[in-house]
Amino acid sequence: MPKVPETEFVWRNGKLIKWADATIHALSHVVHYGSSVFEGIRAYTTSRGPAVFRLKEHIRRLVDSAKIYHMEVPYSADELCRATAQTIHGNKLNACYIRPVIFRGYGTVGVDPLGAPSEVFIFAYPWGAYLGEKSQQEGVDVMVSSWNRQAPNTLPAFAKAGGNYLNSQLMKIEARAQGFVEAIALDTRGFVSEGSGENLFFVRNGTLYTPPLVAAILPGITRDTVIQIARERGLTVVEGDLPREMLYVSDELFFVGTAVEITPIRSVDRIPVGTGKPGPVTRDIQAAYAAIVTGKDSAKQDWLYHVGAD
Ligand code: PMP
Image (tube, rainbow, N blue to C red; front, side, top):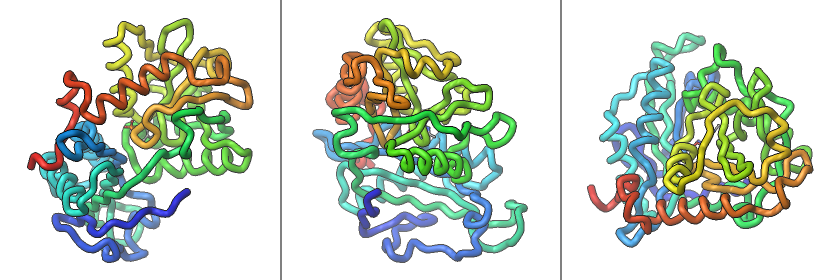
């Protein structure tokens, strides 16, 4: 993984501070108990300057994640949107990745989280393709993980919480050790769930399939975007439980997520997906997504939050 490209400023609890000052005490609650919620967001270059894609939906999910964990957020959703814009603007960034994080900070010891103060940070920095330079063009090779996603009565999948990513890390470590770039997990019932940091779509006989919210997935904003794009193009999209073998007999398969955008999968467990090359539906959705995020689709301007506009 590449090193984080440092930028000048970080937004911390209401103001921009120097990148090097964005530090916390090692006894902070989050360090010991994984008590954080966060977002991964992208801004793109448009003809009207940088625009954040579906910022309001990302901030809504951040606030929801905090609510699930009874975490106090001392800022409104609007304030967090403006803070995001300020972080991009302050760093003179154009296309970039944005990482807001809210966590339980320093002040108490022990599991009980309620006395630990919340801290809010927003980072923004340039960031390219998540699964490698050629991943979006050529597709990626993945495996089915031996790790399952969490059962629904253990850790809530709706919350994008730091602790959930321990499971993702195990998936990733296993995949890397076996020479794959990414892994797909099943849920505890044995149905297909998602990648370590992406949702999944299948194409078979021209119909799109994607695992449902009950399959331990994060309700992805790119997933929602792709469902809307596909339906507008007249494709049928089925949200339903999918058995593992659908991974092997689909015509096309692709990951979706803020980081990976739309990334074709060309093999699973070394079995080629379809012809082993990215297929026409994947390509079409990739192109539609690229047009939307860069402001070239006039029908989808509502999804863009222009940074200069505040
Ligand atoms: N699932 C997981 C586990 C993720 O971490 C992500 C990335 N946030 C996604 C799915 C995709 O979500 P989104 O499209 O909102 O980025």
